[in-house]
Amino acid sequence: MARKKIVKQRGYRTHGWGSQKKHRGGGSRGGRGRGGVLDQKKVWLLKRGEKLGKRGFKSLKQKGLKPSGNAINLRDVEKLAGNKKEINLIDHGYERVLGSGEIKKPLKVKAKHFSARAKDKIKKVKGEVINV
Image 1 (cartoon, rainbow, N blue to C red):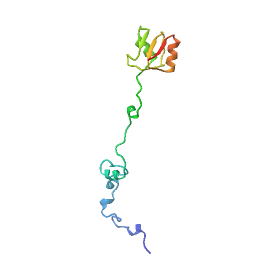
Image 2 (cartoon, helix red, strand yellow):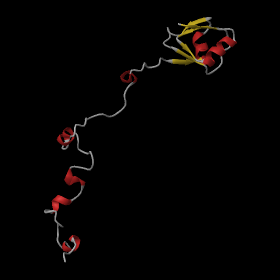
Image 3 (cartoon, one colour):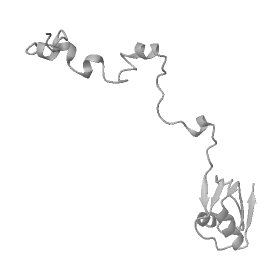
Image 4 (tube, rainbow, N blue to C red):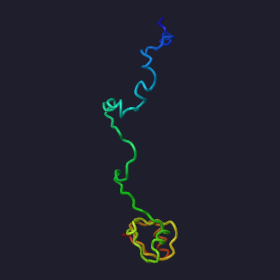
């Protein structure tokens, strides 16, 4: 009757791996998993037809989305207007008006986009909303 492999190899130094160097750990196979695919395992990866180097985030421009413009809150619109009764926010570098804060005097505000709250608050004090 044949003995089991483990019993056969009791006291046998390398257990069938040849030199001890050949059976040390992940380093003897060039790393674990996909480690080393940009270096020593590149040929292995290319033979499998996989692609290299896809990592990180894509910008909005790469995704085909238009980055949203600068926004300003109502509290800052009133400060920016000063004593004027009309303000064109595009000249100041803003595209959107958001509804945070209060506005006390009626203003004629020109911008590309307004939030619903911003529109309500401007109209509440008898101001005017103009989409450019």
